[in-house]
Length: 449
Image (cartoon, rainbow, N blue to C red; front, side):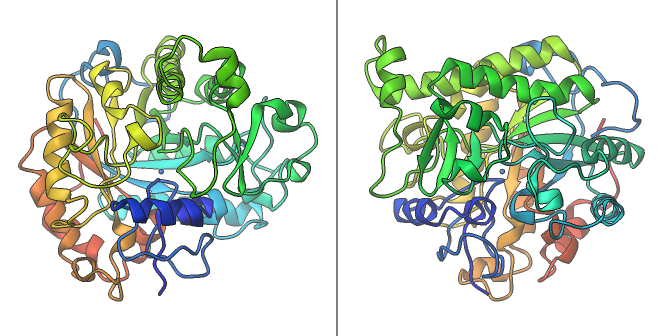
């Protein structure tokens, strides 16, 4: 089996993944999945490269979070046990595009049943993978990962079904949106006629073999919010979930062309990097406020790449040596917690205990300290996808490695749960790592609230 970064799987980011590995800590993403067959998109190899609920189907329940994100009411939340369901490139679901509506629905329900069988209490379903939608959005086309053709009606409403069926099983449904990715190619003419990126070509930047919306444009940030809030307004989502993609991962030899936007809007900033971080912060802050106003019971969570900053760059950082969200992705994930713009944070800690560049045993206490006293819940993103008998990393060949992660995390009361990438691995569990986690840590089912 060829191992590739999770980000490479979900986005085909071979160049970015290679750069992240060179940086020492690996790539990232609920949009990235290492340890999958070479047939998966991407194809960048790397020895340790890494990548992105509640009972009842009625209205949203208030008080899910603690005091985070502006102090939403609620007591101590139960342990969070989640899994990501990736739809881009058909990583987890549907198994391939073009299946009948009945087959798609059956596969989705099977994954929800798997979550219940594994004594999980939440699923994080990717519903906006590439500036498209898995619901009848008023702003964006139907996703190509359903029918094989962007814009084609699949004949059912996957998000509505997912919410109803998850709640019927006692699972939370967190809707996962990718803010800025438009396409895993650079040809706008391949987008459906009427696509916002075709109507507004000035919004789009080609970079690393892909198309992205430009985060430096206020009108883009406003549109992204509207696209997300369209789903929030229609469905009793338990949470809005974002992955690690804001500004794209660095690609060697390329620059992200936001020169015009920087000239127009960056004059008050000391550097382009500071302006870019401001743009990302603005999107997070504004979206948080709008979700609270529109549907107060719906939480807001983000799963960033696991390293905020390395201590070598900032004394507040972690003792790590790799790519960082702050310096390389212009995403100040620590600030989102400190400012309580999010209800929960799910850093993707996709490294084994003892990793020399990014040690799980270093990052868990760093994140626990970061959330302490904020009321923001900490759920650790876990690399189930790495657990394979033929992994190039000896630690990941051990079925007990992931269970050891949960044992270590349990020493820190700030860690309120874990999310596993991804659903296909939760179901298949090739080397028994998930079964070991369930046996050691999930002896009984726990309701999400």
